[in-house]
Length: 267
Image (tube, rainbow, N blue to C red; front, side, top):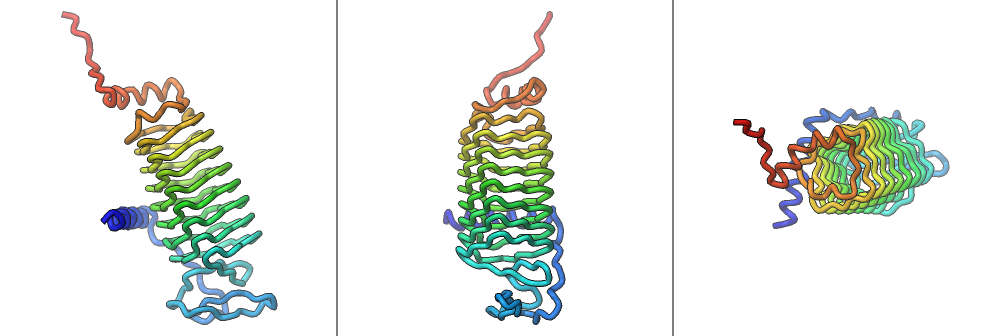
């Protein structure tokens, strides 16, 4: 029953994310690639056929330079630079992407549980409903990306930077964030329940309906951000805010503490 409930919540998030982001653009198949087949470039440069897939778009591939780079569970992808790609419902848990640069692409659905992303960069990449639970991100830069309805519970992020990104209905419950910076981002319905945040900054970021239930904050700098906390006001110990933010949060803090604020009767 619990599993069905989680699946239902995830499906709801994905549907809402797709409605907000609109249709995912799909690049045309590379010239010469037969419809309904996936190909991997061999050392000679000739395409080697893989398993049959529903036409017209393969389920797991990275297109680049007129060629194609496929990967599966626990594969190692190193030093790839890919501009313009699509990954639909890819099944690649545990895949390792090291020093890769991905740009102008989409990742929709799929299972990337436990994947490892290290020393790479994502530019203008859209992730919709991607399954990234317990994934590990180290020294990764994300710029102009949109993450919506993604499952990142139990993930580990260290030295990760988000710039001009949108995070919409992202699940980071139980995740560990260390030395993470979100600059000029838009964050909506972010679930950080039971997460551990250390040395996290949000300069210029608009935060809407943040869930901090049971989260642990250490040196979390909220200064310069627009902050709306839906749950977990009692978990702000360890955060730094400015005077303006204190005034903005005062009504919610008073309500949380049960304080009644009334004008003094001068009669």
